[in-house]
Length: 78
Image 1 (cartoon, rainbow, N blue to C red):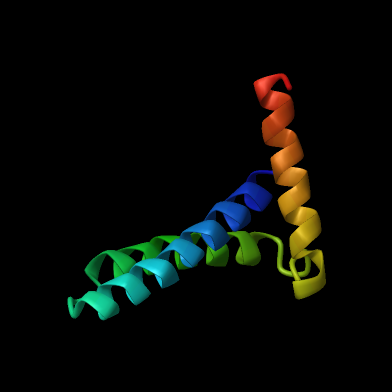
Image 2: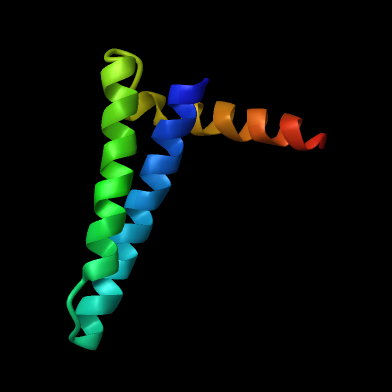
């Protein structure tokens, strides 16, 4: 479950990196924060994929997100 969490958090951070890059480019500034987010998110995804090489594919991403969100919600007690 830990590597699934790394994978999901990494994907979310990568999405934020893309949004930060678009915002920085539209403002005419250097995308510094987005490059840091890209390194962090990419690192988390690489760690998860290297630990479980055949566990993640395009078709299993929704299932992984669902399992991580269900685990998080059960941790919160709802």
